[in-house]
Image: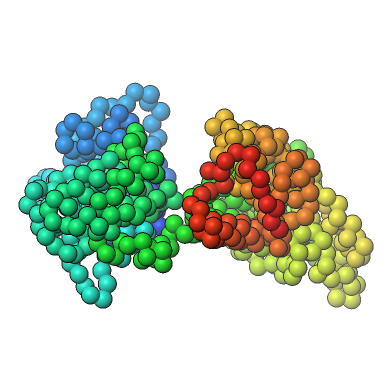
Length: 567
């Protein structure tokens, strides 16, 4: 039995000191996810909560950083300034800021399981160690779940190896607490030095190393927001880093206090980074991509975009509501159980959801499909059916549309088909293509309104301004309705935004709304659409590098710049 599964005591709970890593949620360990899923209380600074919250169970109490101390979590007392906020509470007033160790103790009372999450690894966090000692003194059982330390994870994401076949020494220095003796020792060494510091203190740390004996021409990389899609890395030398940051207009800046990881040594040279910078060279790295779909439909597409380095922003353009007269749907579902249909055809994920909800209302499950052939219009609809426990008998081998489904649909044969009727649950605004085609093939069709689609509410003002003002790098349109609805609720995307469409019909609608289409999927599939955008990003990056220009995102381009159409 692992420590996270041990029964808590009656008078005290259990505390897990958990390393949340340097920022990428994907770097959480399996053990960390296990601990989070069983926690009653989370204690963490705000940026760490953003990493771990998705793995916490619903209703967990949260202990985030005080808003007043978000910019400096150690301000004033020398310990993290934390405020208790109950996730279920509606109280307007906030309790006073208190010492983190006391908060952990208080939360552990009454048998509750507490996760105290810190950035990076708990073993490298001074305050976490103090809190562990406090737990030990109070007799509160605790465990430690290691995490990826920023000093190790960030260089890996920046393409800077810390060791090679020669096996040189690696020294880790926290510039905020380093003594003169520490600087002297690392300055006299010829090994790799990993310095944890802030953006506006990098030049001072470089000066300390030069004063201690390091040559001014020693290579240096500086990475901010490491392991996240906001990561940015500069390559220079100890002697030129101040000028490099100034020329890049990074400093002076009000964000100068942001933490950075600097790597000093030959392994951080430009030549090596050009070959090893795998993260920042992803095809859509840092691109803010608008995904105008319902949240359920956007999940797989957003995951794929993240794998290319993008930051997806989901904006629902339609809302799904029950039919105004549910009796027709109720009769059809009962007919499904009593053997009225030979086939049921699903033309959307929403249709699957509508039938599934009606099944659950009647206490039915996937077994009710026994003896009935099931068709799905495409891969996403098929996945929704599989999640329901139903493997579709028919998915189009070609185009994923009503026309593609008809291409593969068998004609009615009275010898082999004992029943000639098809149940077609769909939206109230669906086209008649599939119904007409099935009738032509000899089938009777019960065309049933399973749900209604209505235009979604407008997104927040900030999102609308970003759409119209060029704040997004790309927008993916997966249907003509997403074009019409997005323009209707939020306005037309800016000229610098890359427009990607799933097929010719969607592209035509986009052009009718005054948009220039840059990318079109080779096949009408959301997966192929994301791939096509990634390929566009790769070509764009390669062109910039070939021309000797800096690699920028579309939103960073000069407004009004001419754009080339790519299909």
